[in-house]
Image (cartoon, rainbow, N blue to C red; front, side):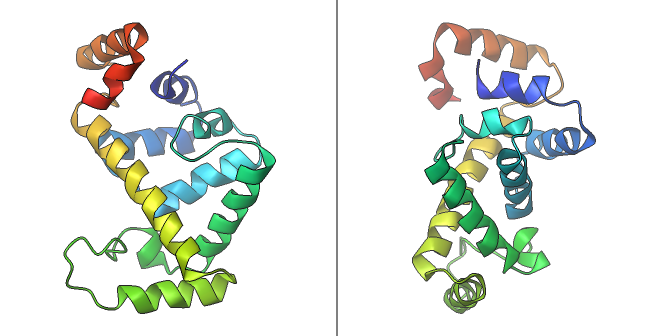
Length: 162
């Protein structure tokens, strides 16, 4: 089963519905990622989903990495978690990102490279969510979504083209 099918099946909880709504708009913050990590750690419905996302899974090594990432996110401000601060420095104008990364690393007891790894993983996941949201793949049962799901069942490699 694919990632989208799992997300659709696990929309029972209010949290999942809120996440799906945001994702259908192409939005995915570090706070959303934190919530997914929490679900994965407690073996919730998204633990299977996490294994389908880049760099995530449920084995012990990945659980340790998720815990470390959660410690890192615990050291972030609300603005950083909610995407109100450009942590990826997309504009290239913000020189404070480096000092933010160092502060977060000190606060979480990790190395700045690990903070950068978390930000890189978020950026990849955010990009995937953005593409899927903009293409209509995360809408509520749209015809386009159903067609894409059928195509993906026939050819899973087609996901990269969306």
